[in-house]
Length: 439
Image (cartoon, rainbow, N blue to C red; front, side, top):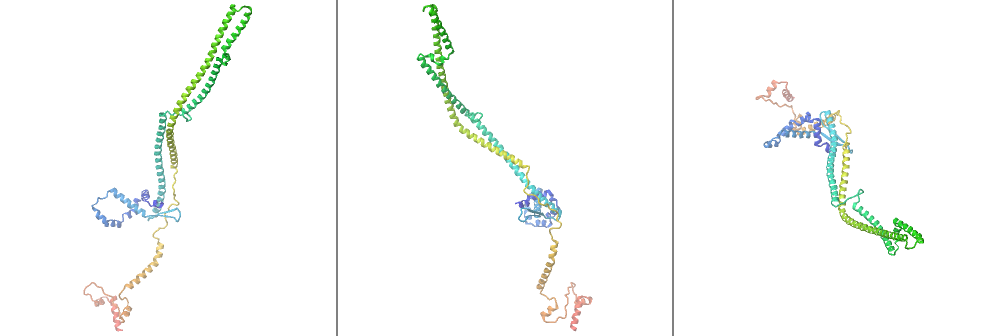
């Protein structure tokens, strides 16, 4: 995968732009090579496409850039180093400094490409998370609003600790009712006891009567009158005015005591009636609260569902918010997955051609080639090259050999050549034949 990235057109385009290789004479000369122009001119498509619309200047520039990148990619070599995860990168150029500089640029652009890819991925993730969080925030608001609206519509109020107000009221009324019933029972028992004593003529034994300060005061006054009556009765007769006055005062006191006893008994009865009314009121309130609690219990089911949906949205919102903070924190500390192990330096010797290797291989190869050509030429030659070949083939002695005359002048004769050029090879050959005949 990393080799494919290092040899990708996008990375090559960035290297070309960074090192301004579109102005490199070496690449431009290869781009505008005469042979390529000739092949392009001889291309049948060049002639068949004359009727097609011509390219604009921008299209020509784009096509030229595409071909320049193709040439650049042919000069790049990317190979893995053995079984390791290291990668060797090289660039072929006639200039050693240019080769090292472009190779380093390829490595730097590759590392920067990894960082840019991580930054772009982080930015996309941040943007997606931000959009998602905005959507979840709206969902949380809508869910909370739905919960509050449902509470208002169904009169579902809660206390500070989250419990239902109706349930708290129901608990309070129930507690008050228990107390009120106990109080009613106590007061009814007291009223029953007082009533029975009154009916039995023992009203003075009623504890409330005994405890009454007014009755106690009236009893004291009655005791004084009795004492006074006893004193006067020894001195005067029963019809004495003072005795009659005391009798009148005693009747008055007894009347007041009777009235106060009735008032006390009435108070006890009234307390019992008030207690009964309180119990009745509490029972009515309890019945209403129980009815309201039952209706609210049905409404609470849907309320719980709405609250669960709101809590789920809120939890998801918090999770995405935490993830966004984590992503934003990692954005500033991105590191590439690859690094440059060693930078390229200008080579001391050209990688191609290897002169020592070529010279070492040229000598034996040239000898073998020469021998092969010689044997081939001898095999293909069907004529005679030496006198020995003629004698061996014909079985006759050879007196001499005469070179072939190739003279473009018409009417030229061999004898004239001997006379005009006596020292030439042809004249020497004729003299040799003459000597052979003489011998």
